[in-house]
Length: 628
Image (cartoon, rainbow, N blue to C red):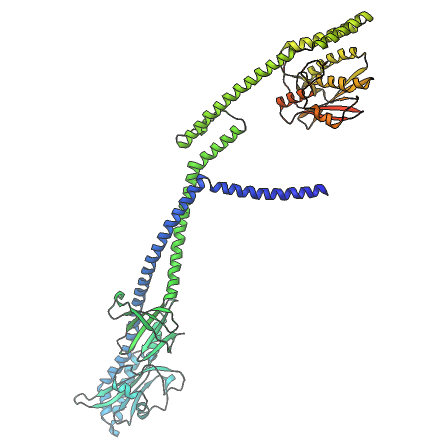
């Protein structure tokens, strides 16, 4: 459970560390030259884009408004022409009846003899009406009235026919007098047809007089009702914008075109500014106004040839601004896309020209940090960064030269120290050894004298042979056995040495010369000898971790406490009777770490009164070398 909690805690710490590291990396990135150049470039592009966008917005809004006004004016001109053509078609028909001799003869005679004249006048009217197909949708009713008011001729579509039409009923209309005062004009505006059996039939009435050809005398009247289709039909093909509305002013009444019909409205406009100087035609009036809802708009008004009839298109400036903003947004998107493309291209160029060389220089610095001081000519470009790369290569070569010189100095120092060690053979040891040989020669006639002498000679020869510090483990074991042979005779055979090798290949591992001898000597002098009885030193050699060699040197002596075991690797002195004066356990530990690194060296484990084990950890290094 404790390990699980610790694992979860470590994962949590790792996540926080990764997040913190990511934040630091991002912060470092924004402090790089590349990030600053990109930031300045993108800021400049955005600033230029904003300026261009605002200029484009102003130009686009101005041009769009002017183009919209001109387009609307042109469409209104076509619309008014079409409406005028329809009205003039009806007026032409009325005029032909007004000047017809048959109609005049009918209006002059009001007795019974005038019946055939009425028939002739009626035939003329119907023949003229039937020859003009467009009149069927444009004319609702035409009534020819004698001045005596006793007879009429009526032309009406069957859907609008009514038996209630008479001269008196026509002349009794409330607006007849107004129409009479303004002959031929739509002075009454749009009214409901009073004679139709259908409700909500809107018409445009007007009145003309039939005059005597030779006298100043009115012979009769022609009352005409024009269908509102003369206005609405042309609107079917009229393309209006979503932000505009059409209005018609007929007389004093304002009508709005909605759902293919004209509806009277109370809304009027408050004119704010006259913009007629932008009009294409002198007949068009352009005004900036505000409607009753308070919304700003542009009014484009064009009169028709019919007196009192005007058509107005109202452009909502709010909707117009939205359209302009949409256009502006499109321009901004194009500009930003262009700026983004430039930014990407510049970023790639910057990455190719600056970032990649800098990354190569960073990799070069990391290789130098990892210990690779060789010259890398690929970082010596023909520009400023190449000069930096050349200087880095020169610096790395200088560092390598200094390091090699320092290594040579250290090697010479080690060789000197080792030679000093060779010259410091303890005379007390030699004295005791020689006394032992003398004692053996005096007391007994045994082959041990030759064996001790042989072992000692091999040791002395190996010491004086050379300065090689690394030897195979097998050779180090051979030196140890020579040394132990001398110690066995010295202690009268009361100590024994047992060596166990897990894999014979491990004996080819490289070890510093005279590593095992001080450790075994320490086991004899400080472990077994104080015990006062026979003892055994066992050596076990085995592989650890796949790439390391571990050597356990164990004795069954008196052991030591934890404090003494801890000081064993730090004290510098050795026993007086040791083979070398200055080679103690701590010296061996330091030499191993100096040669192989801090991960290697000695480890002490001991139990007071039972045993002491000194473990040696070495890297498994093989080297083919011949030793005598």
